[in-house]
Image (cartoon, rainbow, N blue to C red; front, side):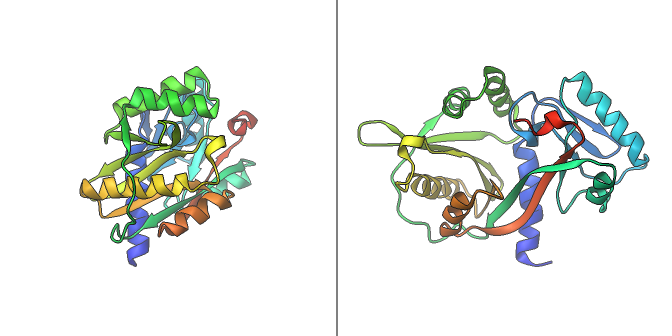
Length: 254
């Protein structure tokens, strides 16, 4: 196994830990996440093991659980999903695919540029701030805050401020042992195109390095070319791609 493929598997496991909501269930080796929030990774099925049930029975049981939670059934498909042909089998059943995302990794946190300091922000305030900037519903904001409060690894929110105290960019890190994940990187529209996101991410990596992290990962929309160029400038490289499948049109509505 190459260093990159090993890091990809570590990033997947760490990302699952970081996105864990308090509403979870397990059916025959599949992990069901049932948060009412906006993030699909916290309200989907992660097919972690092949299990013993026939696929149609497993899908039916998962669908019942999601229906009771008032959520459409969504399955996250990664290179690690089980059974290995799950994506093709769902396609054959007429499940559509949507929301492709790339996982990018940095194999070392050495040689980071000098950056200004960041100001820490507690989880509830962070969820409210980034949610309001994104136009999220109050339900989504509260679910985001709840997920951070109950995460098995603590989320740490930080903001980059201008000379007059204005918010230039904000983001979060989750440090698990010696690997860090970057989450919810956001720059207000009026501050974009000025390099603030690059400065913020470099500062977040330096903070994670100070806390003992040596490697990093993040998730970015496959079609977000601007963000992917920014992360490449920071030394991140493509590790793997994932997407979602559902048969419910409502699943891709937001």
